Amino acid sequence: MHDALDVKVKEPVTFVIFGASGDLTRRKLMPALYTLFREGALANDFTIVGFARRDYEGAAFCELIGTALREYSRLPVEEESLTAFCSHLIYHRGDLSDPAAYSSLREKFEGDNALPANRLFYLSIDPGLIDPTVTQLSASGLITPPRETPWTRVVVEKPFGRDLKSAQALNQKLLAHLDETQIYRIDHYLGKETVQNILSFRFANTIFEPVFNRTHVDHIQITAAETVGMENNRGAFYDEYGALRDMVANHLFQLLCLVTMEPPDGLDARSIRNEKMKILGALKPAASTPEHPAGCFGQYAGDGEIKAFRKEDRVNPQSVTETFVALRMEINNWRWAGVPVYLRTGKCMAQKTTEIAIQFKAPAMQLFQHVACEGDICDLTGVKPNTLIFRIQPDEGIFLQVSAKRPSMQLVVESVDMDFSYSGRWTKDLPEAYERLLLDALRGDSTLFTRSDEVEAEWNVIEAILAEMAGRTPVPYAPGSWGPPEANSVHLSNDWKNE
Ligand code: BG6
Image: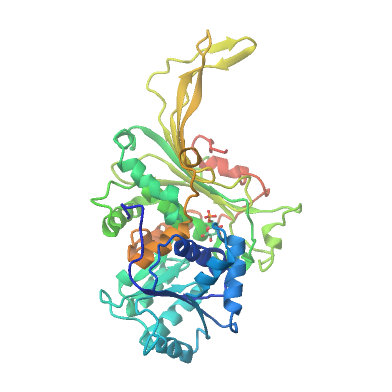
């Protein structure tokens, strides 16, 4: 992780994007590279090579990227800066399965006018093509030996497999050609500014850490609710993976690890990943009871403005894929034993919100229990348990809900927020997750990327969840809701926090 604000790539690098005409390149990768370029974070000697099958003659690739930047860049795109950015772009037409495409790419790293020799290969391609592409890179001599200069790094996008077996197989295949230190598995949640703040908040303050344990915490809730459905043509992919594999197996587990892990020995990648591994090893679904099942799967239905999932393009009309998951998990270690951790995510929900809420126990003695009236308004006075909220998005911030006496002659206690919001404290836009992560990969900092054993441990937990959920099919829920009402019984107090 970085200690200085002014973080730069100091070496010349060639950044090769496989899947250069794809959606991720247009929406995330190029805008992130453009911002890094504009902010002077890249060395002067850097080249971006777009590798794809389509034919872009002459300036056509730059035009394609210019259109994408105008739509998705968070910085203004003036002609002059676009021209300057495009002077670092080249297009390499090729088919991923064609060895000649790789040998012609290798030739570009040789001779006069060679590309910068350090190389980062970004695989923004179908998961099934990752292994054959890395095999071709290796066969054409494009992968340099580990821990040497010029270096090679390969960034891999999720999904990293579909279950434990396929994840292990993918890891083995990657590790046949690359060293673990050369593989950067991207989980974009780790690049979000607010997610990085979880560790700082926990371990740079003295007042919170002593109460982050089973003595003081009643339960933890992690929610990643989305309002989107199958936009951007995602039906076929999503029908194969579902909410558990698409969101829980990576993003939600990573949030859970950061908020519950022990203090690491240092801020280096190894120390942080080792602590996350311990949590994943101790994580399991809670035992189900008839009143409180450990999980609930849902699928959005409906005939209104939003189509039912089963009616989305490229989705099986009889699909039993879950678009919503609610889970009750446990962490079997000394710090967290007995504290339920609730996870919830879904598509087409009431509101876009990603947050972690840590609810503390009620005070040992209920002093404030009476009904008090102020004019015509009567309140059941009483302190609500304190809740600490990490709001990942939107309205990023950290909020502590405490009880305070309302100013009046009567003793009316109500819940108030002590808040730190990013927008109130800093006026600058928050960096995009991909800006941080691409910069880190270019600088060789793998802290915010997932190690192979972490990925396998994540799938191990998913398999335990699937075993616990065996035979349960998704319950329909209305688009625009907080999921199926049945999800309430997953929560021991039926009390999901809904903004
Ligand atoms: C992706 C999932 O990893 O994360 C998508 O594949 C999901 O289904 C997205 O929509 C959510 O990311 P964010 O940053 O919008 O919360």
